[in-house]
Amino acid sequence: MKNAQARTTCLKDYRPPKIFLNETTDLEFNLYEDHAKVVARLQFKLNGSADPAEQDTLVLHGRDLVLEKLLLEGNELNPDNYLLSDEKLTIPKISELLQKNPQCVFSLGKPY
Image (cartoon, rainbow, N blue to C red; front, side, top):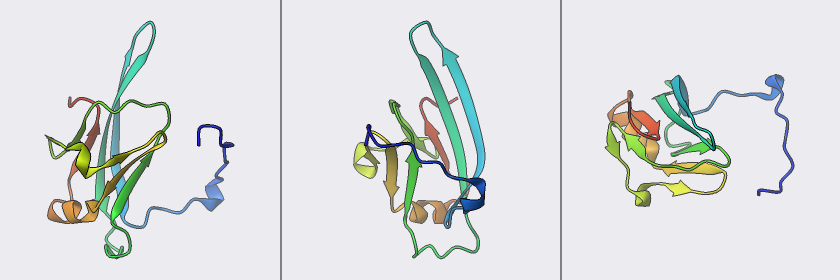
């Protein structure tokens, strides 16, 4: 998919996520001469009107990224618990985890 054409999504075509709503996004930028390191801390909650049986997977899109750590509630997830490709991070069965604690925090990179 690296050679795929970029696709424009217009605001009028945007639909909020069915299951997961992004509450906050905190970004920390560390700039170096030859690269940049970005730590993203994302907080999600379940959409109260969503049917959890409808979707059970969280997908985060991105390109040219290196995943150093993936934390859930401060605990590092084992690579067996997620799928990582060139353009996305997929966490299957995530709604079960969010139902147990609606304030779960996902950190991509190192914790603060």
